[in-house]
Image 1 (cartoon, rainbow, N blue to C red):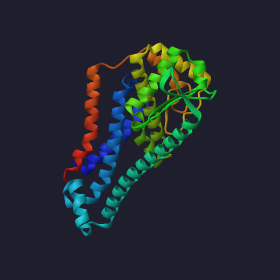
Image 2: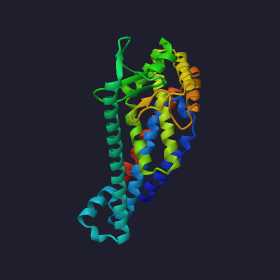
Image 3: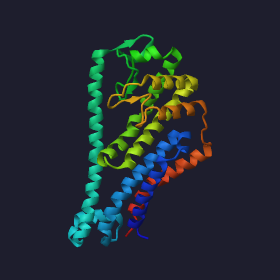
Length: 304
């Protein structure tokens, strides 16, 4: 079987794997590892899809995808019009994915810059919560504004009214976990994919699944410092208070997916009854994710 055919199989297999993974529940038992698996599937699908188009186009050169593309730019007239169109489609698709990722990054940066400017006007610090800004708003809200230089953790006055000191401390640890682990960067590629394919249900379900895993990963980090019951209680109080939507470019403690209550209840049950996967199984998943991500690059070098 040629490298191009194998790339097509990898692309189809990655899409099928993503479909199955959106329905999986075992991923909740090891969110960080599952996030890496999602990233590997996304990378493999993109590289394999591009490679399939390029590989079909440059197949007559018999030098694989990388060698064939180099040869194409040196001597494109050796290919038929159909194969030239396939190469053009592959390069266009690659450029589109890159551009949409850059657009998503630029949009998030602009949204955060505007929100930081707004916070400078309407929020204030609290000596009892160093590094946290308080927003004078009655609705419950707790979120972080990630960034390299000046990440912010924000809570509203409504949050301070419904949470006791232990629950508030757990929520702050959750938001600091988002900042520390840069979960905003985890979500960016999936957000840009939804821009490219806005009508694709699989992309929306993927983004919802990864968002929930990101929240679970932050829950796990917070649980290292505070009893799980404190964060679980805070989540239930947020759900009862119907928290305000988090601003664009931020990550909130209590808002993922379309259903406002179900993800929170899932997280609460998980916090109170943790069941992490055994370490050998997590190691096997990491090895599988690495193989999935690297396989398309290996196939790029296989001659047609």
